Image 1 (cartoon, helix red, strand yellow):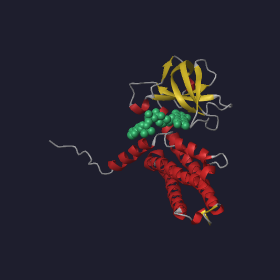
Image 2 (cartoon, helix red, strand yellow; image 1 turned 180 degrees about the horizontal axis):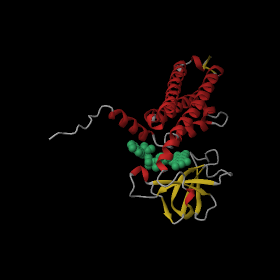
Image 3 (cartoon, rainbow, N blue to C red; image 1 turned 45 degrees about the vertical axis):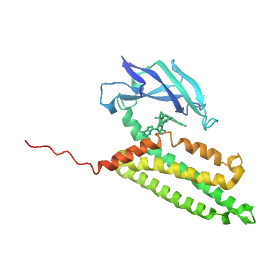
Image 4 (tube, helix red, strand yellow; image 1 turned 30 degrees about the vertical axis):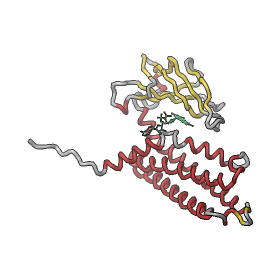
Length: 261
Ligand SMILES: Cc1cc2nc3c(=O)[nH]c(=O)nc-3n(C[C@H](O)[C@H](O)[C@H](O)COP(=O)(O)OP(=O)(O)OC[C@H]3O[C@@H](n4cnc5c(N)ncnc54)[C@H](O)[C@@H]3O)c2cc1C
């Protein structure tokens, strides 16, 4: 947020550093999107611009690749990238100066729904693995499905998964009907709810698999690592909860009434 994209004549000059630049490790990556302050005196949401930067522009350096839970996150990891006096033509600013936030907000809403849809798919796969294992593995003379509270675990997972799916469907419907702004609360609600529910189901599936659950024989450990990062990436849970609460409270705050003297 503190990086700069300053206009000098017919060029824009970029300075800053961004870690967790997803996709930069991909062998086909050629173009970066840089976001930085163009006019610090403008209104808060009109200060930043988004700029297209070819990866081979002088001054762009991939400082290092970051691992997630000890391994390079697919596909091809996330990089820490520095930009030192990087100059690109003015027409590389997307949609014009000061429109960075507008573009980010427009893109992030549908992106979050997409993350949640993929997360629901992973949770569904985890529940399937959990059920197959609980039927196939016999311990103490019975299939795991008949031991302890395992039937409750399965039922609760199905209930939570359906709740998460329907909330996601509602958020997508709100986005279609009322745009990103009108669906802000619902998008934040699924951004919190879906990864947390998926993680709980994946965790139960790992448990039901015993040692196999944390091995590479089943995809559960990978799923857990990937979805755990979603509680941080694209805004931590707490930031989304703060937005949901703010929008909720706004409904009940007294409106300002102009006083007549
Ligand atoms: C795997 C991965 C991929 C990423 N890919 C990208 C990418 O492609 N592009 C990109 O721009 N960014 C990317 N990010 C960065 C990501 O958006 C940030 O990590 C995320 O927004 C959190 O910011 P932060 O790391 O600075 O954490 P901080 O802002 O330091 O937050 C740390 C913690 O502080 C607490 N906290 C923060 N704010 C509040 C609050 N308002 N109320 C209560 N508690 C709070 C929360 O517990 C939070 O988890 C990626 C991150 C990860 C992990």
